[in-house]
Length: 483
Image (cartoon, rainbow, N blue to C red; front, side, top):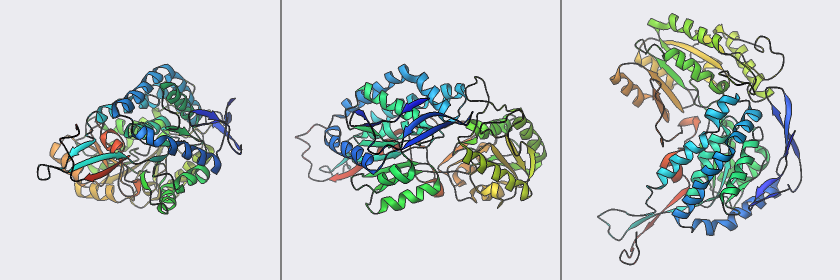
């Protein structure tokens, strides 16, 4: 049993002000694997005070020096990457090979991309030739509260902490209480990389405690949150009283539009993408829209692919999906599957209950519904599990209408060999991201959505700019200061 009760505040591990233990559950076994403490208001206040005291010094540190400190985290990653992978696999159920190959490596991937973007920032730049004595100055916003989820824990820590530090902000991180272990390892990495005391702080806690305190704290200038749309609304309301900047990366209900001329791997690719991470990704292509002329074939193929997916414990090596994160999540997914059956969708793979041969663990059968119609519960709501809905469409116009008829707007997908059609679809789909024919976004591309998916833009120079204020200066004496 792992015991990690302390918080990382002002460069040291300190005990909580009012200890309140919380068990971290291994979702493969349903047994406790660690015990942490949940923070109280006093712990949040101490972390914010440390960040506030450290801010003037860190903000005035030369950009090159900040860059050097952050770059040293890469060295610490190489030393601790197996520790990170093991922690992520244990706490949230990612199969160990996936944790090693996809989950933990999010840190160096994003960090390197941020360093590239950072090198191109002009901290003081001319407004334009029409105003030779005007300058635009970029400055860090101040103390920031960072609230991260459990499903891709290191991915979200990297997308928030790294750009905040590079921008010159100081921060308080509250990771999900479901997956706190990797965050605590990351705090150790920051310490060993030489991040100055108070610049990075970590307080474990739940949303109603530390999350709410950060969101309403008068000395926190910004909240960056990734999680559910429901929680995003609550954070926005709490932050409004102090006029904080709030950036939200929330849920999704992505449409994967498969035209008759899609490549031969498109259906398999779409099903596997949906089931990856046990369906626990906000950008999962959970609605497969299929042109009617190939609909029956696609339904059969999707069902066969889902039936071929193996489900197993997170500790086992191999290409399989693991459990979902906890019992509450498992029960909610079962409820959605039952809703799909009750509302008349055709179950073609998977279904209710544990996979065959399993009697414990939060494992879900890879499930596919066909003949789903717009308005069904499984078509409207984010399930956050390995459940795919297949919907037929007649033509491009109907595909666009169905795809956009959702409260969400994170990622949509298009499968077609017709380049002109792909371009039209990319411009008409209402989402922050569109990926086509299996091509992932390039390094440094922003991640974020519209509508109920929030409007954050994380990654690359957009991700750093979220933590910066823009100051307009006139009467700049350009002959006195190098730019």
